[in-house]
Length: 253
Image 1 (cartoon, helix red, strand yellow):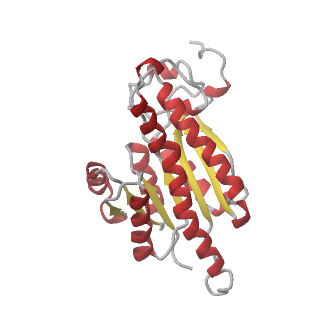
Image 2 (cartoon, rainbow, N blue to C red; image 1 turned 90 degrees about the vertical axis):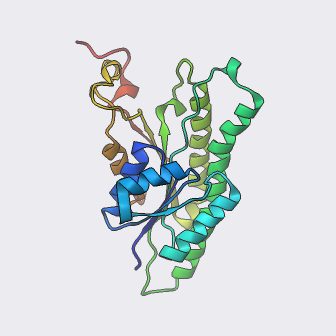
């Protein structure tokens, strides 16, 4: 069996870097695809030769096709696709233009649908080919997306993030049903934004565990969902929020 391969569509900020490192350091092959050269440069500076890098726009059909082709050329297969949709600019409904609304969905749900179609076709092809190869069993296949908790609970002046990430969450749930016959899983991690030490005093007062998540904790959850230990988990939304979702009010002093 070849080493499992994870493709990250858009490295984003600290959470993406942590995910890439977590997979690479546990013997996964990792391909980072990002249309922003600055993001790739930052990732390569941080991760070095632990990963491979492709400058392709993950929000376009051509960019996704080239990202898949480059991954197949280098690693001969795809087993997990991780997406971290961008956080839109803070805008209220009254501030949004039609172009902003279109961009919101293009970089969110539409990009996720295009990515799912592109990469699941390769996963299915590999599953069907490997089914008859006794000496080469099939690696587990999955999609994992890391979203803001605003996908399920909005806040003032954060409507764009709620709408964009909420739509992606719906796509991920639908994928779990669509791809289940092929044993391809789809799950989401909802998380509070990782904050530097000293920045989360406000958050601590509203979170039972009194802090924001660390990037490595997000990475560990994504890794678990992609692993064989999560073979019977699909269509799920894991809230990595330190208990905030079950707290009514603030943590007492």
